[in-house]
Amino acid sequence: MERQTSERRVDHAALKVNQAFIITLLLLAFVLDSWPIAAFVGAVMLLGTAAPALGLFQQVYRYLLRPAGIVKAQVVVDNPEPHRFAQGLGGAFVALSVVALLVGQTLLGWILAWIVIVLAALNLFLGFCAGCFVYYQLNRLGLPGFDRQPITSEH
Amino acid sequence: MLDRILLSLALIALLFVAYRLVQRRHLVRLRAARLRVGQSPQPSLLYFWSDHCAPCVTQEQFLRQLPEQVTRQIRIEQIDAEKESETAARYGIFTLPTTMLVDRQGSVRHVNYGLIDARKLASQLESVL
View 1 (cartoon, one colour):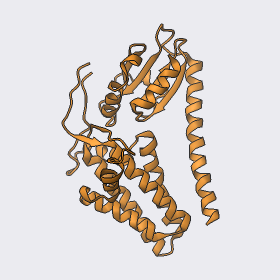
View 2: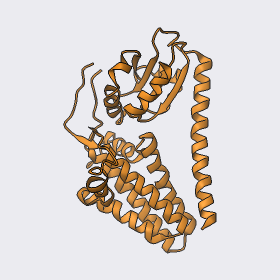
View 3: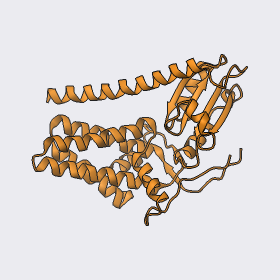
View 4: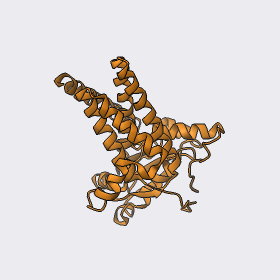
């Protein structure tokens, strides 16, 4: 089988650790009814989108979990931009969730947080990145800023 | 707090059960349909993909990481779900990538929706070899 490969690579283990932290902390926020924990998660997600090197959860992976051998790297050919977009989208949802909680719209706030939990879980356990799907649909529509097409292979 | 813990556990359980029900129903339909794979001296791995499926390239990399002692004993069939849409529809494919493991009797033993890494796939393949 011939393959057309790309040099663009993403460590999927880092993504999975990121998702695991998001799910765990948002669940904790819900159980404790704590908007500050949700706000912290949202801030980490949005900061990690703006400056990937500053993503706290990925730093925990890079400097703690991977060197300790707790999580092994899983580097695959992939575009990083859709994953970054997905994180930004998730961070925006969490930010909206926090705003809703602060203005007293508790049900709406936690529904938004649970949407992020479920979609992060879909990504973590089934490898389906909803945000990446949105990114590639916007790419197909030709929207500026969504320039990366799915990496294809030759069969 | 206890009510929130219980609600969280209930929601998680509900989602998990719903997923397993969809998966089980799919397997039952496939087994009843006895699709084109038929009987083969080797177990088969059916891999449904398309060019517009972004994670499919990653799945192909995982397939290439399967141990040789496993891949020697199976037949891997790659089905482009867009070009062979009727085949994909017969297998009830609703997301990509989807992988199915078929035993020697032609019965679908496992169906995986979305990405599955080489380690988990090898473990499933061991059960059909």
